Amino acid sequence: MALPPPAPDSTIIVTGASSGIGEALARELAGRGYGLTLVARRRERLTKLASELGRDHGVDVAVHAADIASDRARSRLLREVRDGRTIVGLCNNAGVGAFGHAMDHAAEEEESVFRLNALALFDLTNRLVRDMVERGAGAVLNTGSILAFAPIPQNATYGATKAFVTSYSEALHMELVGSGVSVTTVNPGPTRTEVFDQSGAEGAAGFGPGVFWQDAEDVAREAVEAMAAGRRSVTPGLTNKVAALYLDLTPRTALLPVMRVAQSEPVRRFLLGEQSDGNDEG
Image (cartoon, rainbow, N blue to C red):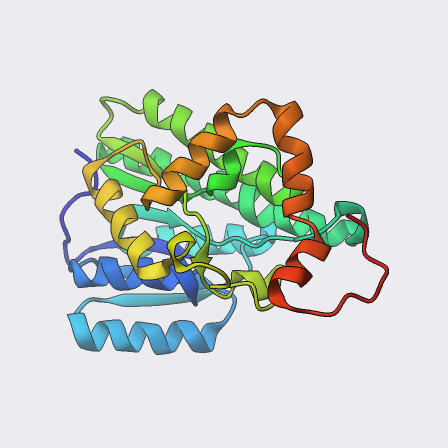
């Protein structure tokens, strides 16, 4: 058994639900009749989305405004959601990046990437999966990235957190075989969302040939299908499958210099047609 069918007393938690892939996951699940618990920092957006999904799909949608990178906020969230409906699913989608040299960012900024992308995901999965195993049913969907398959200079912390997500989730999935609970990893490639503007790469979303980009709705559709089927992982889109294979199989000595340049600020400025201030390093 993977994701149980919808029931009036059940809910699926979706983190990072206020925009992008998280919002698209919420819409996809609501369209399948699932009640939801939406989690993000922006209460206004969550409330608006909850109202819309309830009206359009007749599902019960709860809202929890919380910064789950905070240990205290995460503990409070866990207490509150466990006191409500039965949690049959968990979509750990909240995440952020930090494009550029790690040493050019404040230490706190890099730590926040780690805490949100890796620690929060681990904590929620580690705690809520135990409840699912005890009931013998449930499904987790963890959002990774194709950047999980290799070290990524200029995106070091982000890439490392996604490598953790993939490794942890796939191993846990195998440990849970026979329990009635599954853990699915979705590894999106470039997706048209706000995350680029929030991560130091303003204006990058959707730039370049359309073949390299996906819409959040397409990612969410494949992700939820894999989650519902209890699959170990899914990489949406042919170009992303090829890219993930390239990153995984290319020797590091050949790959790392290329990625260092490809992810650099001068290259991003050139591609976006921006003017350099002359102080960039390759």
